[in-house]
Length: 295
Image 1 (cartoon, rainbow, N blue to C red):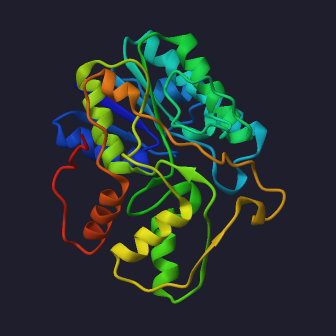
Image 2: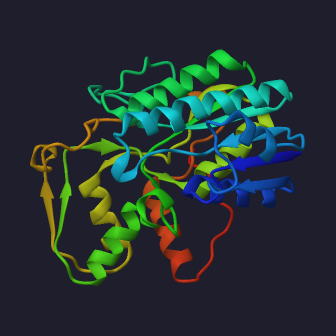
């Protein structure tokens, strides 16, 4: 099988390249300097050779994620252009999406069938991208992740992730103020990529959530990171209302349910705290076995 990964320098993209290569697939990694997803000519040139699967892991977010022009160009139009190319060449189009397509007003995990209702420009652009992909080709798999973390962090965020930032701040002895009333489903990039490979082997289509098992607040995650690293830190819980005014709207509760995985007979990726433990083992050079699945 031949697989192309667009956005191969990002957290999910890097993990997807490694997971596919470990499975014996022929992989073409494409960084942001090699392809412009909103430009059909650029996409056609970069994907001139035929591929069985095209993974679009590009995303416009970070400090400028609320720029509507760039967010819609990359996250919506780009998703459509890549899907159109995949459809013309008989390839499965895998699009990586986010929990921010939901408003955060729920009190229980969002199922894949829940209707998106985003409030931020970023969320609107990703929900629009999902809709355009669905309208463009039936041979699509939309993988929703949330709060991605991995060693090396996010390119769009300067090579950082929440886990890496918490570790750096705690090791430096700096006080940490972390939101305690925003709840989410952390996604460890290697686990999300391994589950995506499982979905491709099954021929899954549609929307599937691939976050790690369990959910937590950002404060609870920070406490777990510090504890698992054996550190002592000055941690103080804060509220969403305490964040600086003018920032993008954040969903209060964006936990993603795993009904899609269960319906396909797949187990959820391991619990998020176990994934944090694995991150720390890899960071210290202890290595890691293939990611297990939670029941």
